[in-house]
Image (cartoon, rainbow, N blue to C red; front, side, top):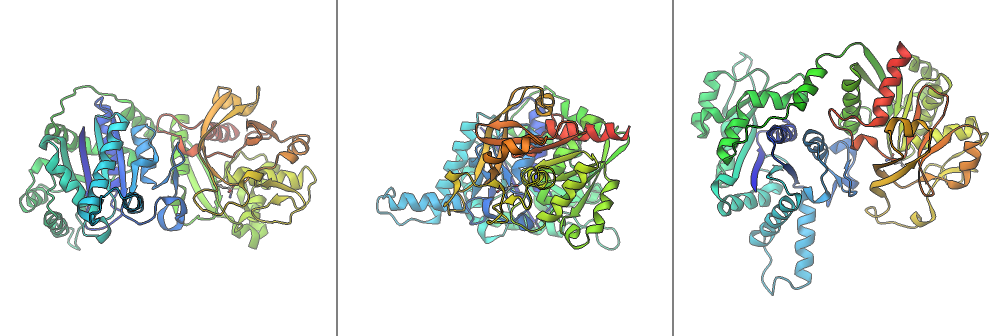
Length: 529
Ligand code: GLN
């Protein structure tokens, strides 16, 4: 097993995740099987309880793992499926060490960070890497070198470096090279963060520098000299037009070649599907305008996979896209603003929790339905479309979800009996992969091109089976089902009106867009024509 360990210096938010994913993609293009592990040094067991305001979207894996959004980047760049073990947190590590201690597995020893915590970290990394059957395992250490919380993880990878054959491990350090007011490229922050790494006994083999403009030769030699890496190993990762160009950029900069040499890899194979996808991305014609009506609208990271899915669909449909984030609450405060939605070619309501903004979202869905604007509803967006239809078409006045109104006369969205009375925040949700059977002749079956699908879930509430007949008799149909659970709602006869209880955005990939997103974008193009 070859390990590539990516650390970060100077500050967070430098694009370490994208750098890691891009390195992985380039090696995959060479024919290697690549997997990736994200280390998040926070104490939380997983990202399930974290606010998308603070951390960006909670990404959901096939096994139901609720993880950091970087795992989404790995899955998209590597076109793979990961599991919850691929996200290592301080919480998970301590939880298992403490329960081993309680079971007496440490045979009376004092349990310490070194060796017990560090052994647990190394064991977990090696097990996940082996289980994945990969040739190369990328390990991204979250946070910035010097953070107290990441110390045990850095110590663990230092030990791995001692234990593994030298040609099996490469350390890549991502830093920032800022420019001063004279537009000089400054290397001091990089020097300092490498110094900090060295104090921990780690020496980077490669330094990837984030910078506005390509690194000057003089900057490269300075970093090379002061940080003791070869000039070839100082990689300029200047601002790219689009993150999907980063693999091409770092490949051109020679990062691939350097890493492969270091790791003793010599494949000459090339899979050029990524390059072709980027090429298509440069040739898009026309534009569709999408309005996303949500709650966390001031933070694009909260809906990262949705943006990515729109992008994948647009690239395959050959069209540019313009996404506007609309705060649902403004429709509650200023009802007249709803007419502004006319300017969009399509409206999307994403997933969400809690009552805030739901009435505004329902108004937006009503507007989309009545004006036949293509509509895509994801999870909560599907549930609200059922509520809107129940209220305004099926005559169920004040229909609602019991999540928002316990006393609604028509609980069209409700907890199924088995989900009531569960209070552990980690245990109440239906998470991960479940399949759905699609109705013959439905839009769902047409866009997926098959009669049974698998998609990822993250929800508590369900369409109430007691209202299905009533709603269907008015023209909304549930065309995807998992036994008594309604997975898809659509309105036949509309240009495109589709809601899913699942989150198709987690399975969309560059070059392989999610079918509902592709059909949504295509419907917008057709409506314009
Ligand atoms: N709040 C809704 C539920 O729990 C929808 C969840 C979501 O959109 N992810 O069922």
